[in-house]
Length: 286
Ligand SMILES: Nc1nc2c(c(=O)[nH]1)N[C@@H](CN(C=O)c1ccc(C(=O)N[C@@H](CCC(=O)O)C(=O)O)cc1)CN2
Image (cartoon, rainbow, N blue to C red; front, side, top):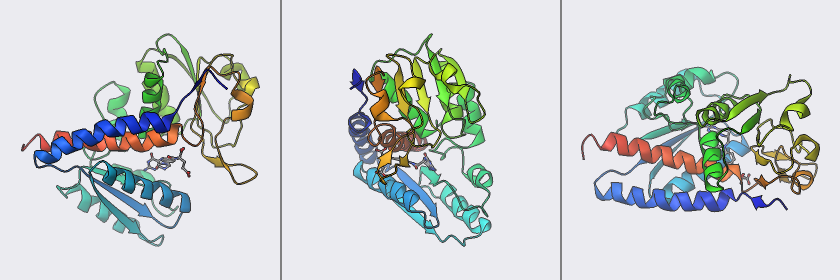
């Protein structure tokens, strides 16, 4: 086993207790944080994530609204739904579950969400603010990973962080956040030649590529902190990450499991962002 198995479930649960207390305080002052989740279509994994978000937000005392739209819904109707939520004073956070069906322009939908209610942190205004170090909503998975590193006392400043994956919602923001904490950051992706030469240099290795068990002991440096963002099914249909846990566990200094690592932190950070939005909006009239 690695010297530290990073327990995202336990860390997430602890943070959610704090969020619950803050929500109670806000409700006492007449403001109940509200989260709206828009789900388009029938994708089973998306449905599970959305149900989890609904359950988790009500568990901390928030109002939760789930809007389910059929796969045949037009882009115009999705945009109208977002517009209605933008103008609903009982809703402080809006998210549209991704991926969307191909006939819907994802970027248009994200840009339609008010940046003030964009608790996913995907709106270009929030992404831009994050990059220049201004307060904004930060994409929940990278924000959750920073919390995991903080809770495990992982030193970031001066360390070499290697990010494998360059998605807009994980890889790109993750590198920027670590850069702000004075890490030296290297991005690797599907076109990177000799991947191992980079990943072996990593003090902190973050993997978000969507390839089951791709990263093995040969890819990592002894004692590295390895964060697995992957969510795949293995040959037996069992949930697994992008990192081959069995191969890496003895060599890594700290390692996240899948499930129970990064996933629970994503939802926790969503609740944290929704609370922050409600605190900001309600402070105007309380
Ligand atoms: N609008 C968004 N869409 C998507 C996001 C997002 O942050 N915002 N991220 C992913 C999916 N996702 C959240 O939506 C997500 C995925 C997985 C988990 C999680 O807790 N996983 C569990 C295991 C779950 C299982 O048993 O199936 C774990 O790792 O322990 C949370 C959130 C894409 N879309």
